[in-house]
Length: 285
Image (cartoon, helix red, strand yellow):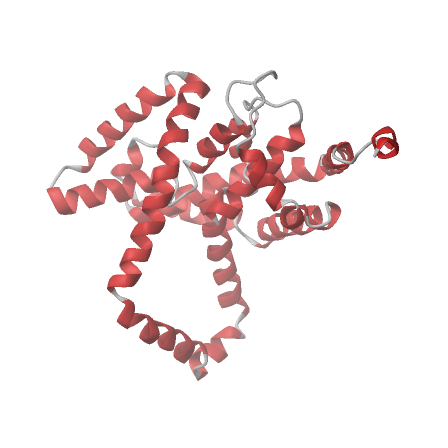
């Protein structure tokens, strides 16, 4: 098992090397410039579209259900890591064996996904809003209970960041590269940006225009910024394996985004032009 863990860690390091980081960040910057900062200027419209229903168009679930389905895997920590964390909590607190937690999670997940995208959409539409409120509420509660330690924590951050050791280490390219590698990998792991997994749910949304659902899906990253075996694996292995799988998904998806960027630009321009009043409407006004 140690050899497998070492192999996964090595492969993860290769996948999330400088070429991958350049591709990920570069694609994001390129599309931001190409679409003129769409994720910033169209965010209010995107939030309004979340609750807009297109009953008369093709698709299986609503905009809201598609967004909640995507958020179900991105709020908090990803599926494999989540199973691992849940199993460790139950083992530590209630002395329940990790494999038992894994089996229970597998059964509960099967009950939801066996009904297809509609079943998943209905379930996540109810669960995820409460999950988000609970996750944020728990974080704020922890901060409130330890509010007296917050100034000390910030003090330690600035103290060590400005220390001679930190300054000398900051000039070391390997240290900076490692920080970027883990920072970006964990950031992508949190919101799945660039992986191409969230569009699976978005593709099932009822809408007559793909740009409308794209705008709704865009809010996922804003809101957020392999289930059975994860419960019984070593946590470091789970993180390395998740990083590796995320990277392997991201590479072809990012290349596809670059190849289709012209289509994305054309479709986006067409949609926003359709929102403008026609010459006939302007004359009537």
